[in-house]
Length: 446
Image (cartoon, rainbow, N blue to C red):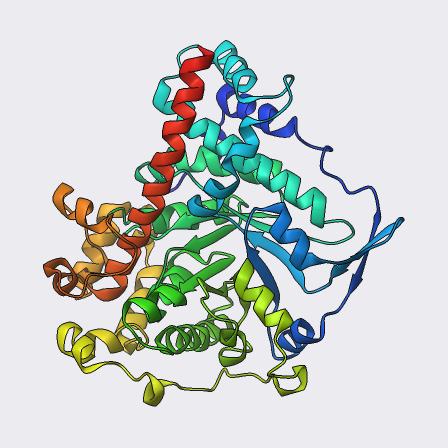
C-alpha cells in the first residue's frame, strides 16, 4: 500500500504548521554552548554506543543532566547526551506549561486560528491537532535549547487515536517532521492495527524518520527492521523484567535484539539502530554496554552519572554476553507463563527471519495493506504476532502496564504481543486524560 504524501497535505496541515512554528526562536539560550565529554558516557561511546537520550520533556530534568556548568558567557554541556524521547506519560508531566502561555500565544488563540482557516473541524479533530501542535512545539523548544552547535535528536509520539488511520498518521507525522527536521516520529507497534508497519515504511520512504516503538522482543525488532527499516527500534526492558520478576530478562532480550539487528545491518544494508528503553536501574548501562542507543529516565541516568561503584575504565561491550543462565525466573512465573513462551521473547526462529525476508522481497508486499500483512503472518504460522482485543479485553488491558499472570488473557496472547497491547493501553490512558483537559479548553474558547 503506497502513500502519496503530496495528495494528503492541504490547508489544514499548513495551518497546524504555522501554529507550531510561532514558538520558534523563543527558547534559544543566551550563552554560547561548549561541550565536554563525561567519563562514564564517553566509556559507553567507546564500547559501541552511538547515541544517549533522556526520557523526558521537562527542561528542569534535562538541564540537570545536560548542563555541566554555567558561566556568564557560556554553557558547558555533556557532549554525549544528544537527544530526548517523549511519549504520552512524559508529555502529561509538562502538559500545563502549554496552557500558561502569554495572551498573544495561547491555546484559545490556536483554536481560533484553526477554526478560522478550517471551519468544519470537529471537536475530535481539534483534540488530535492540538496534541500534535504541543508535540511540535516541544520539539522546537527542546532542539533550540540543547541543539546549539550540534545535531539534537528528539522523538515525538503521535496521538494514540491516529493509529487506526494510515492517512491521518501521515498528516500528523508530516507536520512534526516539517517543523523538526531532526526529529523521529514515533510509530508504535499496534498488534490490533498491523498496518503500523506500512505507516513506518512509507514514512521512511517519504523522508520522515521513524522511531518504531512499544516493542518488547527480539522478533518484534527484527520484524520492524526488515519490514519498515526505521531509523530507530526499541526494547522496553524495564517492563519485561518487572512484569516477569526477573532481574536480567530485559537485558537478555535487548542484547539478543541487538545481535540480530547487527547481522541484518551487515547482510541487508539496513539502517535501524536499536534503543534500550524503559530502563529501571543504572546498572543496565553496564550490563548492556555496546548497544546502539540508550534512552534513559531522568533518575536512572542521574544515578549512573553519580555512582562511584564502577569506574569508567571497567565499562566494556557486552554484545556477546548471554544472561540466560542468570535470569533466576521464579518457578511460579515459569509455571504460569511457560518456559517456551518466555524464551520466545529473546529467541528468534530462523524460519521467522526467512519468512520476513521473503515477504520483504515480494512484489505483493509493496501493495499490501494491514489485513494482507496479517494474513501473510498467519499463513506462515506466525499469526500470534498480531491480536485485536475485544472491548472487554481492552478494559482489562488498560488496568495496568504489566501483565496479570493469573489472567486468561495473559495465557491466551503471545507475551510480546501482550506487552505491546498493555503499552498501548497505558499510553491511551494518559492520552485520554490530556484530551479531557484539552476539551475543557476548547469548550471555554468557543
